[in-house]
Image (cartoon, rainbow, N blue to C red; front, side, top):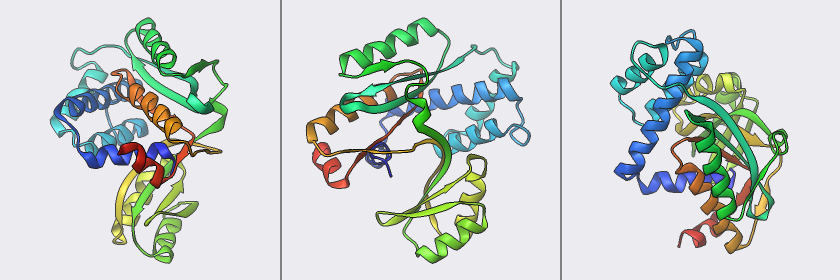
Length: 248
């Protein structure tokens, strides 16, 4: 898994504070609103909304909160209009960053993104300069299990790659199949740590210096803490051992 994924796992295990939890819910609600507005409020006929609903439930968002967000998106309740923008740039060390935002004020968000880049040693890039390195994929993290069993269940459900990842496995598939593959693995008795449609880099940059690792994680953290930022994708790879020293 990429260093970014490890960082997300570490933060998840540490537990979310109330303020961070509220920020997560606000981002999930915004994704639900936009998906419902663009494709309708029925998850059965709107694949993007279905993905957003599953993501919200995984984040422990209540059904009532999910329904309210969908209604705002379909116009049944008053809601803001959000614009989807992807910013591209580099973290310290030449690490590529893709930053997906949903904003009701393009000028405000653009200024905030530029400020984070400049304050924390990164640099913005022109559209397309970074994006070509990433492809949207379905990624399922399986905790433990035997390789043959995971591979058989995953491939039969439509996955196209299974790789060892620490004590578990990383299963790759088409993004449209991610939840079908997850359900098949669960039905086969395997524990799922996460399942998502995400952007995967074609090549990883291995980070070996502790100071560089700290700077990269700091800028990623700053973007993830921004209310308008929905997802941050990167191509850095930090070993578990170095990640532990940075955390310490």
